[in-house]
Amino acid sequence: MGKGSGYGKVILFGEHFVVHGIPGIVSAIDSSTDAIVTKAAKGLNIKDERKTSKGYGEEKRLQQIESIERMLKAMKLDPKTPLDIWIGGSLPGFSGLGASAASSVAIARAINEELNLGLGNDQINAIAYEGEKAYAGNPSGIDNTAATYGGLMWFKKNPAGGQDLVERVRIKRPVEVVIGSTGKTANTKAMVEGVADRRKANPAKYDPLFKQAESLAFAGRKALEVGDLKKVGDLMNENHRILQEIGVSSKELDQLVEIARKQGAFGAKLTGGGGGGCMVALTGGNEVSGKVVGAFKGAGFGYLMTKIGVVTY
Ligand code: MEV
Image 1: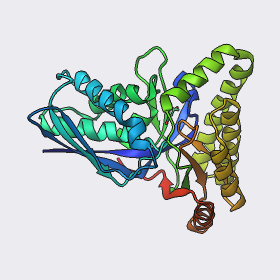
Image 2: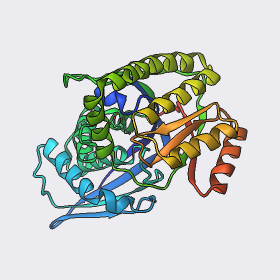
Image 3: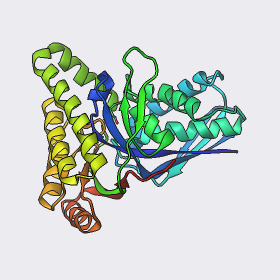
């Protein structure tokens, strides 16, 4: 029996833009997906016991099988290797929290242990990236990197396909955030493709937005490092606006963002692929977190109270 885990994450700056080589800032959260893998007599038998939003399991089932086969191939194993795989853990299967990447990392680690492959973190990360392709089509690698190593990081994809730039972002203390869930499962692959298509069709609109996203990531890093939460929040709000402009927000995401700001959050934005899924509100403390959670509950939305910048490495 092999066991493994992978962290969930929130993206504070730069989702979608990171796919195109713009830097992003991501933080692992203290919820993870766990996997247990055992050699089987035949077939791929998946028992997925994660708590999920409605329809998540069905929407992702085929992508999950493809993802595991891709990872087995990346490990130079037969993609049809018979395995029993159990998936669970504290990270809910909500779109936007890196649940697919967390499960890929957890499964890759569990296979590694069960089959004594001797793989290290860098190899697990590269294998999970192959698995992520099934879910995101052309992923940046930000989710699997956060899921593998944890912590708060600056991530810039190398568009030429070489080594990505990954740097630790140091902050004075872990900062409270609340994640709000629309309860709607989103197809990350379709969201990523949609942005790429619209950018191609309308560079005059999109190129300046990509430039703005880049400036926001740099300003966001600086504000995080000096602990200026008001500034981080303002920049997150600005980031949400440009995500609206590239067409990845939704009515429910905008509603959650509005609620969080009204309850006193420093800032709020959608997080991850959008089109449903989750948003993140920077509250900076338990009092505001409590108010935001109360208002989310009152409006019928799911939530998760957590922190960014928890050192997990
Ligand atoms: C998904 O969490 C983040 C996206 O930018 C896709 C990716 O970077 O792979 C939408």
